[in-house]
Amino acid sequence: MRISPVRFEESDGVGGLRPVIKIWLDHDGKAFGEGPRKLLEGVERTGSLRQAAAEMHMSYNKAWFLLRTLEDRLGFALLERTVGGAAGGGSRLTPEAHDLVRRYQAFEREVDEAVRVAFARYFSDANGHA
Image 1 (cartoon, helix red, strand yellow):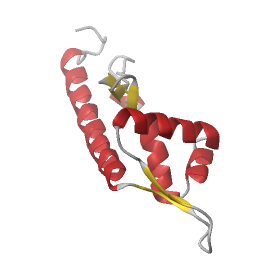
Image 2 (cartoon, one colour):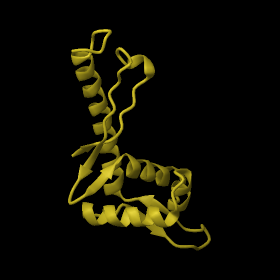
Image 3 (cartoon, rainbow, N blue to C red):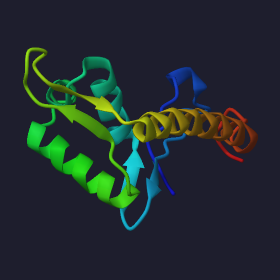
């Protein structure tokens, strides 16, 4: 496991200090993190990988390659795709991807809270010294 950025409000900082961490899940390389989570949330919201990638200022090709790499590392498909037709095609999350996003969101929230608690414990004085 690695760590993704956790951002706190300016007022949360003690003596001008604030914690910044990065977390991600690793399996022979980065398998899932904040960026992929946001991309999949965008697909879930828009029904389109192309639109979700555009919202993140990412090329469609980069998003496609990222998903293929993640699927290889995770060992399961992240998207179900429909091609063309009257409805115009699109993408939606597989049940496994939906579960991964939900659990990763909960994991991020718990890590955020743990970091807040530890930060307050070790940097609670106004000068930012332990």
